Amino acid sequence: MSSKLMIYFFLFAGSIVGAYVPKIWGAGFLSISSLIFGSVGAIIGIIIGLKLTK
Image 1 (tube, one colour):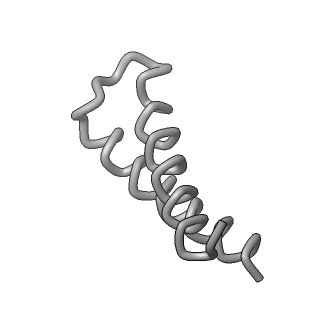
Image 2 (image 1 turned 90 degrees about the vertical axis):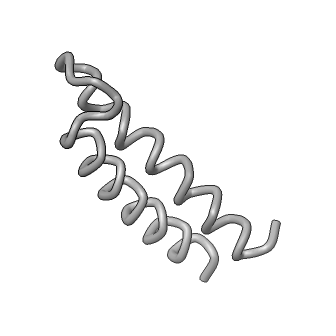
């Protein structure tokens, strides 16, 4: 798997997991908290992807 593809995979997975976290306490998928957590999850996914490809 190329490093670019791996980074994109973790970005996608992190944003999905991050956006789902507010659903645990009853917030909707299109709420502000879901957008914020999705963004944070994407950033964390990029960091993990970068660390795994080095």
